[in-house]
Length: 454
Image (cartoon, rainbow, N blue to C red; front, side, top):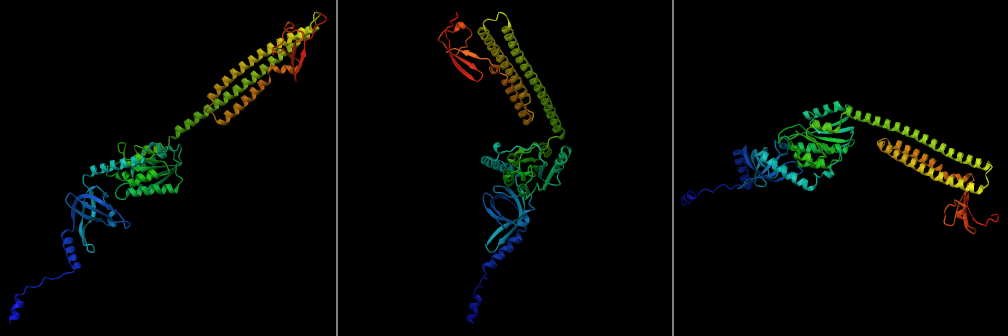
């Protein structure tokens, strides 16, 4: 009886649970109490491993909670979280039993003070990429003058592609256009745009890329402010035109691209000029080329006339000198043939000097005129210019061949004293003076002897 009394007075022992049982009870209690909650905080320690799930810490001044966005929910996000971003998330509290940790399984993300956060992210990334030199004008490439193959990275159903194709059809309907159907808004759009830029570069054969979309809010255009897009544009081997939004919209893509267009239509106009303008330019070049060739023919005729006049003048001068010599030799008073020959030689030397000066002046004037013609024909094809220059050099050589010094080949000579001066009179010599006489095939020396007849 005492034993029974003692057993009744003894308190009942509390139930003993395993760690797994307790953790499961906690999970059921938390998940049942918080099936859907809205939480505000700042994103930190964000990481996305190879599994594709997104893990981060959501914190405020007093506490923090671990959060996860499963891969299946990533595509439906209205905003993609990033370190330092102030967000408002919705999800359920769950417990990871093996780790004994509770976390927030996030289903949707919204930006809190979205515009301010986005602008801070924009300025931060802009400053970092600028410091790396990605905005440097020296690395930007010019657009090709007449591209034939053009790539366009944009939405295939948006207004931007319609505007671009309309400009192409009006200006050059025979262009080859490759459209990369990229998402240009929402989660995953930045990676899609970057992937298409890389794919078009690897495909090859394109002359220029247009990357962009039509207008929208800062959030709508945000994918063009993502670092992955900036890196893809910077790495592109094909020149890139950024055509995002309206003229007042600026994105990181604009600063990295080779050329920034205010609108997609303006980008298309930059790529191809008006066909009528190019045709008019070609007609102008053709007219200038025809005028240059006509001037070339006129100057060639003028050179032929000049050459004929110089040749006729030289023949006339030589014939006149010969006639005077023959007349003098046949006259009754011809008693000093040596003196007459010296006078004739002196006159020929003077004619030669005068003719040389005339030829040099004419050649110089002709050269100046030809230099002027060469300047006016500077835009003519190089082959035509070289051909005309060769003709001018050939004819200049022909003019030099008409040098009056050739008169020595006709039997005349020039006598020089010891100082190399031309002997022009018998009074310039004395007995014993050694002289040099220049004839057609060389020189010989002689000595003056007294004239015993005088």
